[in-house]
Structures are given as structure tokens and as C-alpha cells.
Image (cartoon, rainbow, N blue to C red):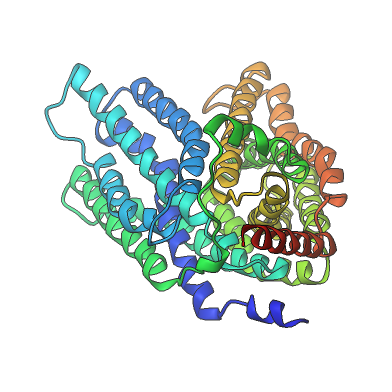
Length: 457
């Protein structure tokens, strides 16, 4: 190990302080994903179609704003740095916007209800983008080390797992502590908002920015900046692979409840299975970091996906009715999916250096933004496919399912997602960036910067 590698290691305290940011972001994302539709339809008594339309508009803006804000942050020049400035000034608006989601004023009717819901959704999705893209883009600006980035991302994902599980479990528990449901959900929104802001500020004020690793503001206009991302071969590999894997993952997650309810007749165990899956993901994060230290990121990621989707594919073989085999299947799937939580986000910083060879600029923000956009498109496609499959296979809500309907549920919970993932594995097995090529890229960049420095003298 050379001296530069030693200097590029981060302290445990830095990694722990960094993970708090993802607790705050993930608890907001999880709470909205699991409960916002229930809150408006069942507590606020708003037309579900209206809520769904508002959510669609919010998510469309959320997807489009990711690359736009990533580009904007790359062009930012501030004494606080290109990323932390948005944590300083964006965290409180994020908390306020989250609290407003659960605090619809009484007496609103008609068009005013529509305006309130759409306005608060757009407010929330704007600042979840501002804070999350800035937070994610800090990773490559904290260390250049190939393995240390995996370690930092692993710590971050511990925070993400904690936040995601908190957002899935605590909102209804908190809401149930108060005199009325409406007050309870309002108080939940306030409590979550305050805690999320505190977590983001722990990261913003606790993690020391490394000015020497920040590049000057990008000068590329927005469209060329986005288009250039798709000329980056490793990045194209990553997002293409992610398209297939994310669709498969969304199908597994969205069909789990259907599979447990109608195929295995184990509806009451849905919360337990979700905790088992997410808990296993969290437990094995460091295992995959350890594997990556001994291997390359791409093949390690491929191995994790093969294990995860291989396990879910095995569910197709379980007979109708309760089966104890679902427990090891979910456990093994969580073990494999744990790699998916770490490695894509650990690869992006390496892609940024590859881009720097092409453009001469450091553009962390645009890459995290475009990754967010493509991920959200693939998630939307997964939900679209899942909904139409239920319809085409003759699914009937809250009723005994036909053999054809059960076949559709079994196929799209197990074998079909596995097939989608397996098709994409060669892109990871032969991923262009590994430990050796990344070191060569850093050496070429160092030489290039040295030559530019000499020419400017």
C-alpha cells in the first residue's frame, strides 16, 4: 500500500457521521412510500384517484429534477463546497415539506384540496432531491480510494436500512398514540421531520469536506452535460444493468404480498417477512464489503444478484398453502440483495473519474442525478408491468384466485424477475472498471493535471 492510499483512508467517525444523512433521507422516503396514500384516502378522506394523480405529478417532477439539480450542484461555487451547502440550506425546507404532507388543513374542498396536495407534493419532492443528490454526491469527494468508497457506501447503507425500517414501522405506531388519527399523523410528520433534519445536520456539520478532492464548477450546459453521461461506457453498463435488475426487484417486492396471501395463505406473516428481508439486507452489508475488498465490484455485485434472484426463483416450486421453506428463501434473497444496496452506489464514484478523462471536469452531481432518473423510470416500469400482469392473468381482489391468476403471481414473483436479472449479469461480470483499471485512471488524471498545471505557469 503506498502513501497516497494510506492518506485516502477515512476514519470510522467520519463514516458514522456520514451514515446519519441517509437515516434522515430514507425514513422520509419510506414513510411516504408506505403510508401517504393510506393517510389521504383513509384518514384525510380524499379521493384516492386525486391522490394518485398528485403522486404521479410529484414523482415525475422528482425524476426530472434529479439530473437538473445534479447539473446545478456541479456548477455551484460556495465556501461550503458544492454539496454541503445544500444540506445546510435544504434540510429545514425538507423537514417543513415533509410535515406539511401530513397536515392538510381542515375545511379544504374541491379545487383547494387539489392545489394543496399537489403543492405540498412538489415542495417535498423538490427538497428531497436537493438534499439526497447533494448527500449522495459527497461520496466521491470524500475519498478517491477504490475500496474505501465501498466501505463508506456500506456505512451509508446501514443508515439507509435503519431509516427505511423506521419509516415502514413507526408512523402508524406514533399516530396511534394521540387522541385522533388526524392529530396522530400530524404529530408523526412533525416528529419525523425534526429527526430527519437533525440527522442531515449531523452529517453536514460533522463530516469534514475535503476541498482538495473537489473540482472547479462545471462549465458544460445542461443538455450536453446529460448527453455526455451516455458516452461514458462504464456508466452505460451500470444503468443498463440497473434497468433490468430494478424492474425485477420491484416485481419481487410488489408481488411478495400477493404471493404470501394467495399462494401460501400466509397473509398475517407479511410484516414478519418484510422485517426478515430488510434485516438480512442490513446484517450482511459488511460481508459484501469484505468480498469486494478481495474481488472486483462488478463480479461481486453479479454474485449477489445471482444468489438473491436464484432464491426468489425457487419460490415457484413451493406448493399452494403454507410452507416453512419461504423463511430460508426470504433469508437467502435478503443476503443476496444486500450486495445490491451497496455496490451500485460504490461504483458511481469510479465512473466519475472515467468521465473526468473524457470531459476534464468532475461532475459527481449529474451522474447521481441521471442514475436517480433512470432508476425511477425502471421502478415505474416495474409497477406498470406488475399491474398489467395481474389484470391479464385474471386477478380478483380479496377472493380465491384461479389457477391462471396464481400462475401469474408465481411467475412474476420468482422466475421472471430472475430471468431479467440474469440477462444483465454479463454487464457486471465484465464491468470495465476494476481495482487495476481504476488505479490506472487515477494515474492518468494525475499526469493530466500536472501537465495542465505546468502549461498554466
